[in-house]
Length: 583
Image 1: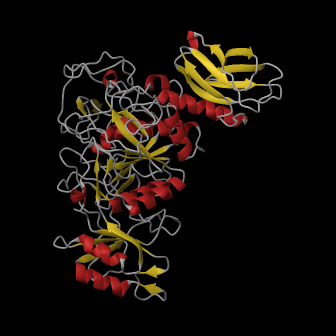
Image 2: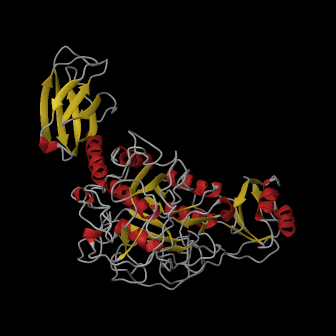
Image 3: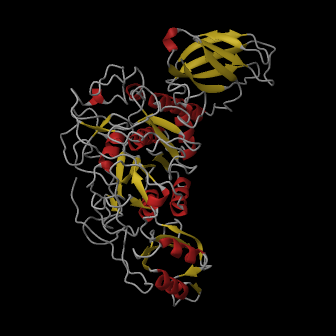
């Protein structure tokens, strides 16, 4: 990819008594990559505040101005410099009036939060906390072999061995090899990686990065008016420049799980072989003394992704404390039809971290090669593990996994673990679903992913029937999702998909049980048909109709372990369609 000159934005802003500093505070990852505790999270990069509608910081405008009050508060409590959070583009409809205020290291930022909150000029004020990535590249290990067969998360036949550990079970994977027969992605789909940046010239990611069509490279002009100068390939929200290159490794690894180039005879294969990646850097390697990405950087990165065409966002990071600023950005992005996937955290504790805990994102936990919830991640402390709780949506493989490295293009022998590495598998499946039907909403994509997940495959004490706080709706099944999605798209196109609860169905011992609802016409037999994901009819049966009585249909071995569509036709041409997993 062509390299472009690094540009920093130089937009003036009226000051509150201290010089303007376009600042994204220092970010880092602790050695064990665990989410910070409440006390740790107070090591913030100042505060964030949102002005009430009609309130300005400009002392010379005719409307209500907060300038004098906040100037006095900043002097009293050690606040300043101050900067507005983007977007600056007049065309963006993202939330406005957000400011970031740094606080003297010798002063308590909570005092300034309280003062701002009580000033009457702000909707809210909060600490600008940090979100730590939920995994970090660990020491290199050297298994006997590597490349695709080492990617047990994609295909697991139970025969792998990890440093002598017999921990693999057959089919404890996401059925990716089956899924690729139906979906491989589309270059029109853009996935934003909000992380430590990406190594864009890595051979496994070559040719896969989004470029800004509205920007002319290296002319030092904000051609598209989005508030960013020469942002050809994304943005670095830490150093505030146009070079989101990875100096830490975490973002490159995450991007690889999602989008490694396939069929190139090297390395690994990502979930999506064709999507474009938008690199948005919120974490650096030079600031390891702190806890990770600031809320301010995350806010701006999410808004940037939504305003610049991202369909999916992956965030493999978190903090135990809620941020209204980040939540505002998430609400904005989801309203613009962006699906957001977030890792749940690595503390083996409940609840899961933010932003995974927000209701509008897909929260992802981690499983091991035997389909149990991860308890003790590779290269992390013994009390680490996949977080759980009432906001968890789904789990995916995330331990003993190999990743690409930002500092070695030819090394494929490093392994680690973390929910950071589970999330991009789900984000990759989300991008495949967008490629199938770009009109799908984030809610529809989440329903497909959750509805096709494999349930009750883990520890029976935790992985109970239906949703549970340890596995969510189950372990990700890519094949189930893309074939489920394909059938829904075909039915939607033909306009033949009524309410899915019209007919009750269940499976047991290779038999299909069907119960008709009360309003069904029973004067004549009904015709029951089962179609495969490609629309081919596999079974047609004529059965006597009766209300609330189960009818049994034996299933031939040829259609077991795949997804099918059920159609029931009665005298009045009524019918019901349901996508089901036939096991």
